[in-house]
Length: 216
Image (tube, rainbow, N blue to C red):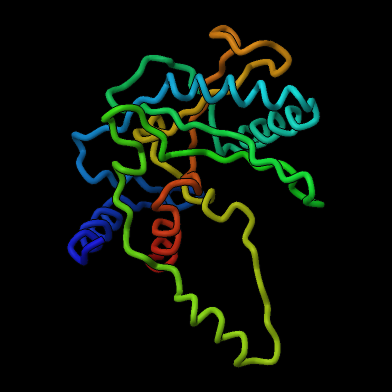
């Protein structure tokens, strides 16, 4: 990314970042407002059928997947789409299970994909400003722990999901799941959700999070 693009991304972000009653709130920093990502409904439908077939081979994994979606809903990280009328900017994220049976803690992770696309339509990632690289250099990360006697490591749970997404942009990050996990994947059994927070799968998630800390 060029310096000019970095400046444009920073400028766009600073204009779009606000604070509501509870948390920092952002809009999507689209490179061009008239460009919209592929709707991806067909891809999302196909991926869901594949994922459910895979999970039904292990009922426990299907239960964990469904519980994860319910937890997101309870914590208001996602919300049910009640009005199915599509606005001019709607797209669907694909998601799948990453299974690591040898792990003692998290054996299943749900991963959302903002890079999927069909034909010539751009993916969601391709429509967004990537933003400048804001992670510390790897060399610095490796050298700094050697300077002191003690090393403290902190992991903030769901850090990126603490940044809210404005209402007008939430339909861009819809996804499909089942109303009843025990039934087949049919139109009547589909539930549509959308994120209310910034999912960490986007290419700009570190940009949003680290810059919001600098501004406030």
